[in-house]
Amino acid sequence: MAELRTEEEQLEAIKRWWKENGTALIAGVAIAIAGVVGWNTWQSYQENQAEAASMRYQHLVSLADGGEVDEARSLVAEIADNHGRTLYADLARLIDAGLAVDEGELDEARDILDEVIASSKRAYVQGLARLRLARLQVATDDAEAALDTLARDVPAALAAQQADIRGDALRALGRDDEARQAWQEALAVAEQRNQPIYGVQLKLDDLGAEEAML
Image (cartoon, rainbow, N blue to C red; front, side):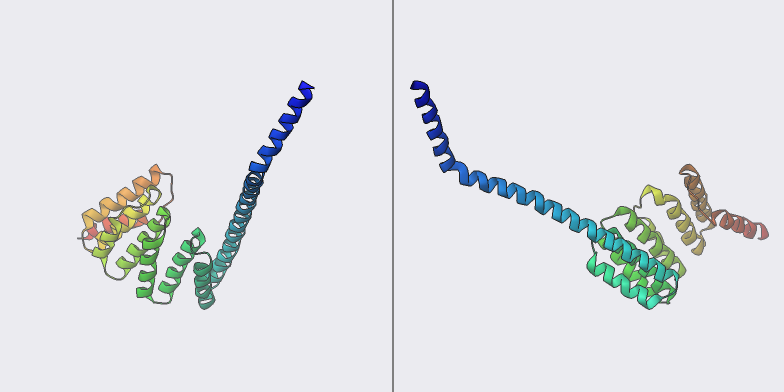
């Protein structure tokens, strides 16, 4: 009887505990399940968004390569609106800047690149935008501004290109000795990092040929 009483007491204790805590326990389990389901749904949504952004970006590249400028630039706006926080939106803006240059809209191209530099959270993309802005500044006879742009940090992977464009800016300013040093640095960095860099040796050869004629 004692054992039975003990079992009955234990059963009653369990019933009381369940009455006091069962609702909270069920709610906790439900919340946990909802959290897992919600996270999985969010992850699935993010993956779908990334896939959609990738597809739209690939279409943008195809349009830009095909010379369909108006449609391409319209698609850039769509990617920026719908996928603004993705890498594809940043890359789309870089393409947009190039299209603006091709259309002769240099001020607009400069504004686009400035926006990428200011808004992108990706250091490599910011570095690409700075290099392209500096090239544009050299091409529009604003070499001093290009040097200021190039004075900002860029990722090490872009150091050779940074030195190359710095050489272009210095050459435009008539600072040939410094230009030579910059181009030599570009070649050295590219060799060290096993990166191809085109046209730099030709610039050095042309500079040497011009000096030989003086």
